[in-house]
Image (cartoon, rainbow, N blue to C red; front, side, top):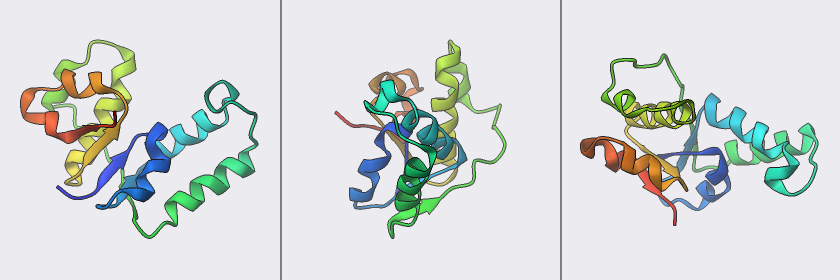
Length: 126
């Protein structure tokens, strides 16, 4: 398993990943949404600042862009979803799986929720 897809809250850590890091439309737009929320980042930022930060991540030599593609509605990971807050993370795991990587996140519950055979697709930062 090589590259890792980075959840929006862990994007800044990706530049230090020895195997590189990936983003997709989902993680990039979520990064913008979270970064523009002063309750999340602790200050009010404007879109130009946030776009510049995103661009610094995506231009990093270790970065790769992964196409999101269509949802695989037949994937077994969907059977573990019990609510609306799990949809995006499940989709990110499936994107990572499709590209031979894994999802890096702070959310330990995400890994535990997956079927045993798919838990390796999530790396939890503690």
